[in-house]
Length: 365
Image 1: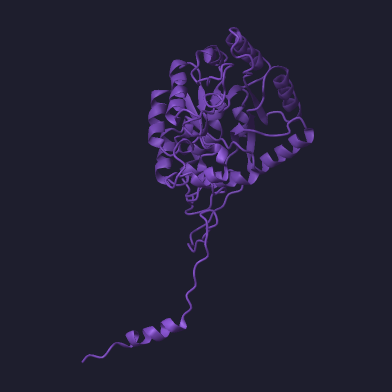
Image 2 (image 1 turned 90 degrees about the vertical axis):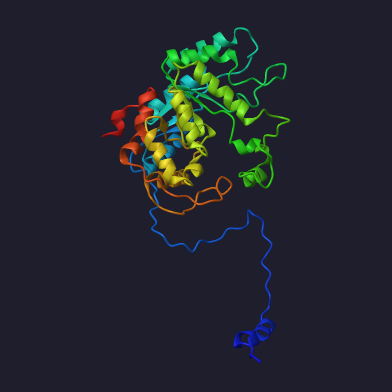
C-alpha cells in the first residue's frame, strides 16, 4: 500500500489552524486597489510649450483680483492664453472684452453667446445674426453654443429645438462671413443615452450624478442629436466649427477621422475627454499625427492641478498612471509621447490660425 505524501497529511492540521477571513463588502466605487507596478514616472506640472485653452469657463472675471490670480495660475501651467467662452452678448460682452484687454492684454479672448429669448419671433434669426456681427465688432473672437441646443432648449409650444433648426442658418452664415469659429457642444457621451445597467461604461458617473442620465422618454437618441450637428457642418461649409469634446467620438477615433475627412470645416478639441485618449495611446498617437492640423487643446472645467494629467498623457510615454476623476475613467492612463511639432500645433498653432485675436508671436518668443 502506498503511503500518503507529507503535504496531504498536513492538510487537515493546516486547515484547522487557519481562520477564514471574509473580504469586506465593497461597492465598485469603494474598491481602489493600490498598484504594485513599478515603472518610470515622469509627472508634469507645466506644459512643454506655451498653450491656448480653447475651452475655458473662468469664473469671477468681473473682479480684478480674480483676474490677477488666474493669470498667475496660468503662468505656472505655461498657459499663454485662455478662451473665455462665456462672453454673452451686447453690452455685457463689450464690457468683458474691455476689462480683460485693459487688465490682462493678450491673455484672453472672448466668445459671444446667443440669446434664445423670443426665439419664436419671426425676426429672431435676423436679430441674432445682427447681434453677432456687432459682438464681433465689439471684440468677440468666436461664438460658443452650449449643449442645451438640441437637448433641452424648447420653443413656446414645448417642442425641442433641433441643432439644425433653420432659424440658426443666418447665425452660422454670419460667423462664416465674419471669419470667426463656432465652438459647439452638442449632446453628451453616448453612454448617457444608453441603458443604465451593468453594461454601461459610465455606470459609476450615472450613479453619482443621476441627472446626467438621458432616458429615451425624455430625450432623442444620441445618434439623432449628433446627426443634426453634422448636417449643420455640411450645410455651412464656409464656416469653421470647433466640435467640442472630440465630438464625443474619443472612443471611436477612426469614425471621427472619417467625419473630419468628409467635413474639412470641422475642427475639434480635447476638453473633458482625456480619459479616452489615455487608454489607447498607440492608436491615438497615430491619429493625432494624421490630424495634427485640426485638433486644439481644451480643458473645459477650470482646475489647475487637473491640467497635469493632460500634459503627461500628451507629452510622455509613461505607463499606467492615475487619471484625476474616477467616474470618468476607472482605468489607468498611458502617455502618447507626441512629437514636438504636433504638440505645438495642438497647444497653440491651430488655435492661432482660426481664432482671431491670438498673436502667434506671443508663443514663439
